[in-house]
Image 1 (cartoon, rainbow, N blue to C red):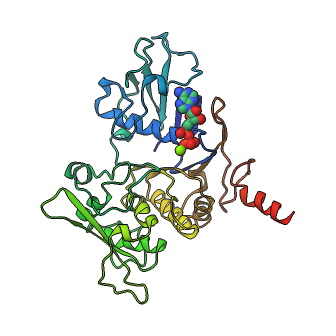
Image 2: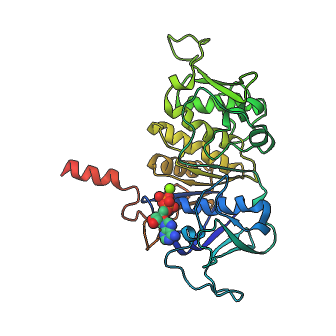
Image 3: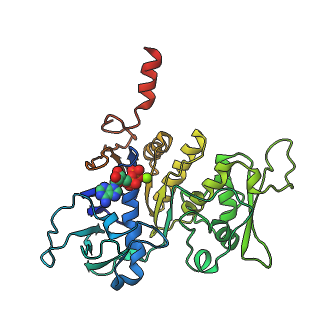
Length: 368
Ligand SMILES: Nc1ncnc2c1ncn2[C@@H]1O[C@H](COP(=O)(O)OP(=O)(O)O)[C@@H](O)[C@H]1O
Ligand SMILES: [Mg+2]
């Protein structure tokens, strides 16, 4: 598990050391650097296959632009005995530190590959099962791609979750191991029934089916509403005729259900397009994934997700010391992170101004 990530001269951060737990929530203002933390981990992962080539700024996981774009505007001195040029640095601590240093070449600021030096050897996390779901995910569509290499061989859902339907089609019978992720109301431990059971937390009665469209490179998703009074259970509906939020949430559900103790899962806004109770249940699922031993880093704007995680701590699904909440409140030049501690009852040690306090602010105005 990564216990600490340090960013040097990377995007909004001149220098930032961030403790990480089995579950870490990144919260705070817009444009305060939350996604940049996920991008840093994804960038290392993206560059891992061929470290000799360097830091690959544009690829399957992230498209960060050029070296000039990622180097912090007000970069600090290199603090590196081997070079005078500015560097973009990452230290990943997994019990011992691994250091990745991207060398900025002032002659080639528009290059999207930076020469890289690695200290500490190859990192296990760079080869571990990995999912990264962007805030911008798949929307209801008639078809989804069918890539054997991505979804089946690598088990990757795609950064937009675009390979989720094909993954489900292929691995639907795989069992979710006994433990916190297994939904007690599902008709079987199989991934397809477990996915349906968790999706029913978002929309009671829903079931789903992923199937190949023969002779094409596409797969299809369909929904049924068997448990809903008055609707014929055998009638299938295409995603475009079903609520947006369900399809949007599907990759998050599948990413969590397939978590293993070695997985690293990066999620942006798992709450997007879900109703408040659905957001809270999503937090329960995310907490269950972390409880299996996977590491999750989750960017969220949802107080329901925060509270769902606090409840998971109170119910001893998560350990308080392994549940880390960061509040990012600087933006532009002054990035700042506050980390309110959480106790065994799920209570937070502090509520800095701007940290999920809008409920009280609005209530004060209403009662004034
Ligand atoms: N090279 C850079 N130097 C300084 N700040 C940067 C650089 N690149 C991006 N930023 C800043 O990073 C912030 C965006 O970070 P991001 O992680 O996308 O925020 P969030 O996810 O919290 O909305 C913006 O405030 C932007 O000005
Ligand atoms: Mg963001």
